[in-house]
Image (tube, rainbow over all chains, first blue to last red; front, side, top):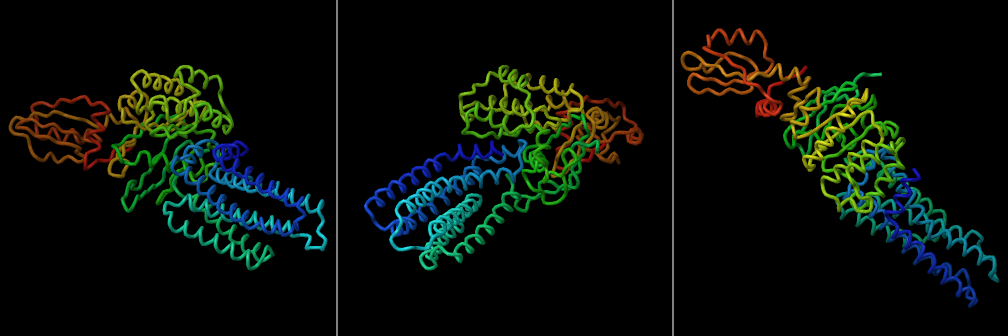
Length: 208
Length: 300
């Protein structure tokens, strides 16, 4: 399994480098914001929307790339003739996707938590805000990644691409309307489960 | 444990409404070298892909090493070596990286044998797979398949693109493997002399059906090509069944008959031919006769 995950990371190293760069840029933006005594929560909320959009596009792109390259270069067709099952190939792919998303979000969340402790806001705020934003960002990214996996594996590209665009619009609107609360988390989890089941079934049953 | 390493039961496969495989039944016993033959597009590769679980069947079931093809575990895969048609390797990987990947994923790896093969084939580890010639790719694929010491080897036209020397090397290697007890080989090739040299059982696919499925020696016994000279003009109907091919020219008739036996010989003798001589047939001759538009079934 470790070999398969390593292979996925090496094959999609550009996305992992992109994740590190994005994370570094966002942290670099946070640091001066803190020292200029701007309200931390405003900075974080202000950054979170572009972060979510970036993650959504990047994650969908990664999912599409992984599946499309696999399909065109017939990588799974070769790998599945080795002592590996199709399930393991897809699982390794999904784990690599999760790692890429976490590479953006984890350093950012840790930095935000540290800064929040260092620069206490004058008015007490909802303590789980950073956690909520991070979870929603992760779920949004993962949902888009799952949709990307589906899009990349389908020979018809128009419907899934339109679907991906629609989902992005719906997600951004939902975040704007509902915030980062439980509703959006539930919607995203449901979407992820449905999308993963569909991808899993397609990947397990189609010709490689 | 079943003695048949490969089992195909009533296999049907349609591609875009076109029937490629029409109720194939096939068994390959342990230790057998099975030569699967057929013209281009006859469904040889499709059978292999279905066996390996790469392609879903429309109907029917296939089994490899007692497990259904769609449910082959990683452990079972480690007992199967596969050389694909067109040598389906990861093209943008360097040879060294591909070898490392295969080695890391394999449950057993015979380093000594693999290095021996790599040295014999003189494969460069620093070049990308796509930069290799077809022959070199074939050699790499073969070396990777052999390195895991497989119990079952599936070769889908493995000598395609190999030069004469490399082809001979491959065959010698295959013969070396055959000598190791208990190994089973399913071998597809268009080079019939290669198949004739190593196979002990033959299957021929034609029009979606397995028209021949019997040991090579038995096949040669059962398919007869005869040159029959009659005192007067040759009769148009010999009242023989399973005639694969028949050509008449004046008094001479050249006839190819499947499942030749005493009864058929007696029927032929009732026409009182002046002479009847057998024309020796190679596997290639039999293959050409058996893949005509109206194939006759020869199964063991």
